View 1 (tube, rainbow, N blue to C red):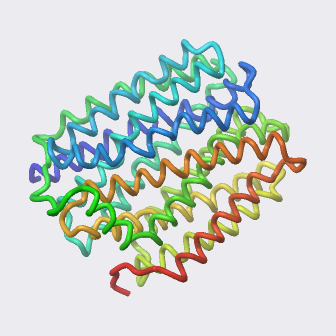
View 2: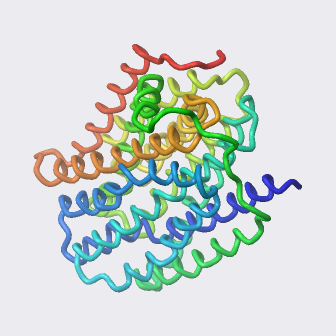
Length: 383
């Protein structure tokens, strides 16, 4: 196995472990905050705090990884995420939780960008979407297995036991990076100043960037607001964790299927993902029992699982062989979505007279993104 391939294996294993750790803690955070007195608006603001750094830091992470190496930058994100469960244990108010999520949001900025850039560095263009799909499937499985672990223990050990379990699992993630025998650095970067390159990227990939932003708005509302809504529908904490886990399981299936479905071009994958995301959001408006809620969020997860690798692969080509900056900008678009989604979703849940209104907002965003993509998908792709 070549050095670069060993780095990919180490990266993928480390990502699986740290996302499993996050998956254990994440379903409990809105419920824990609710017990500490958080309103829906507070939950939305906690989601915004988690997301706000992700609007800016991924671009810096992409530029930094172009200079110092992918795995070094990735390690920063891993170590930050490892300590988060301990900080949650020390939290005594919704404000404390918001500050912890703000810190975690900075750390998350250093995970996905160098990981996606590393894989883009060592793969050929015709196989990149498949390899990115497999990488995304690995972390999606972590987000699936984590909530399953949380669901199995939360009613016996409480939120304290859940956070400790998350911490211990996370400790294995930095150790997995020891399997790598060296870092991966890009061969070259594109010429020109940063702002001119940013303008070029946005001009070429605006339809794709809007697609990933809409997906992040949808998934952020599911993670930040939907668990508390399910509790109001009399779901148990275990059932809430299982529903959240269904998102990640379906997303992993979407990532995997995107690599094996014949004739599924990048453009078609984005069309399909946005269309299914729209239908799933409307279905969530009507979902009232466990089976329908799990199916609705699974549809969202699958849609995003198909859409994201195709978008990532196409965006990675906007500056030729420079991957860090365009992928960093893509992750920043996810951050913008994670600010808009919880912020708007939390306010709608608290102040509108109709409790499913956040999920109708998800459908509106998805439909708008699909319409724009159909009207203006001007990016180079082989159909």
